[in-house]
Length: 157
Image 1 (tube, rainbow, N blue to C red):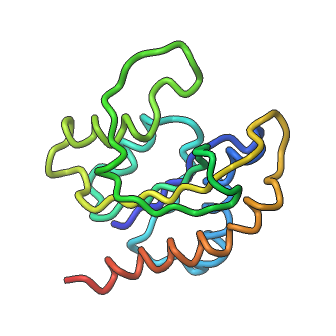
Image 2 (image 1 turned 180 degrees about the horizontal axis):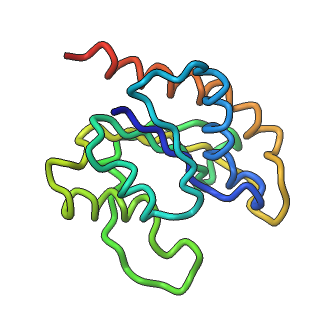
């Protein structure tokens, strides 16, 4: 199974980009290939762990805030983003970065080795719905890159 997970919160403006990508992928990949699953994980890192278990490829899409140009798209290997979990008292306490770290340790060979993360630089993470124009403008590039990443594994032995 190839799994694409969108992360974020649709009601925190640009933070909803991961979920928006999942919604648009559903339309773009109609019919959805039998070995591809699309999931909206919201802000739950635990969902990422369980959706990733037993898949051969995991792709995560989320927003980021690095100070780069709004709408910039970054493609990174998941192994560079894994983080051990340090508990805090926030909504984002256990994130997908923690899920990547914990999933490997909990599930071993049942957790995918091939993990790709697409991050889109956001500018507005305040309350409200709808993406800002630069992030909305990045969606076609993200969709194309996710489809290309899926195709890399599709043709692999």
